[in-house]
Image (cartoon, rainbow, N blue to C red; front, side, top):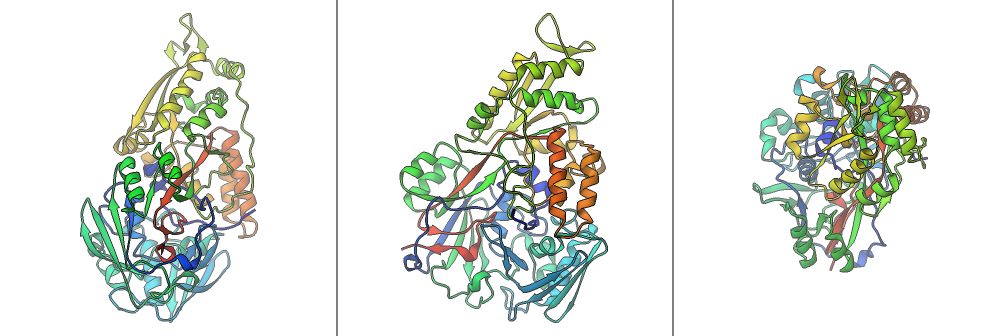
Length: 529
């Protein structure tokens, strides 16, 4: 079993992105030798939408994160294998309530100013203040955590036990002093320690970052002089996958995520890709009082009715992976080598019995009803995801046989936000969360509901899960993972979530190679001759 810890990804990102990718990436074939690397040039990567506000403290969308992560760094780096390695910190020591980071020497900001231990402490204390409403607040840091500095040493203290304290605070993107003092300035400029700093913006088109010549503190001893680094990185807005595929084949793009039919062209041309795990077939349920799935018997019935082999093949585009954890974001905190749960075999007869037991009986018209009301399910899915609609149709066909009325609804980003957090008018569908660890996962399944300002948009109330989350949160780092794995099992067994299948969402490479722990790691880019 791998024991590692969570990236600072606020829960809302995973919800709103829906298809946001998740854990450690790996290339589909052996990479080039170092002798193939050629320094210089511009590395061009596609983003699906304009990143908008570039303030890393407030970033929400994956496209914004993909852009701002070029310029900002953290104390700890995560490799594409999910390992934790030094970045701005050369070392750290932790207990359940304290972690002491020692910074590397000579770190500076892109404007040449000094980056100190006090800068780190100020960043962490800023993120821990609810009034600042940062992206990291509430999921990986809050008022229980504070930081102090003494030279290059930063001491972070939690008033309560936190088995993941070091990595949670250690992977927050850090801003330099000037930007932290004037956060409004970060909306259209960058102020970080990154190897690349923002040099030009063409909104809706390109965001260009230029390499520094004084960088010495990268992971694996990367410096400004490391062979194969590009002189610039350009994030180009390319919203259409076919266009992005054409640009990869022509060499105008070095990186783009392609999930649809254009993959066959790229594979045929011999392009390699990295990949991140994507919970593409995750089903969540609206358990709010008055909705059909408030009854666990209905959740079990309609989950049992699904032909996971057939549906999984379609939604994962023939390249499905068995789901092994609800934690899917790199570095796979507390993820076992195989799932701790067992999903039910497809059984329509059993599904019908469960619906009968729940009081949803077949009427003369072949439709199920209860107290004169039909069993109607609003099934939502992500409109831009190429396989979601076809897989939803297959689910509907199975539920039709049970006498269930299923309404299929294709959502855009605005509809997701409205349905999940405002109107609550949905029942189930291809709705995904992609947390980096069990604490972030618990903000969905054990946190406050949206009407109370929380992220538990499923309205889950699972006492067994809640008790195990509390136990795991107070356990030592060595003991916590087994407890959290048991907690995750409780969610599956009560059908609070049904993980049909995962897949790999590939980012193709053309004329360059790189690592992609979650987003492309700038210090890992190597241009090819």
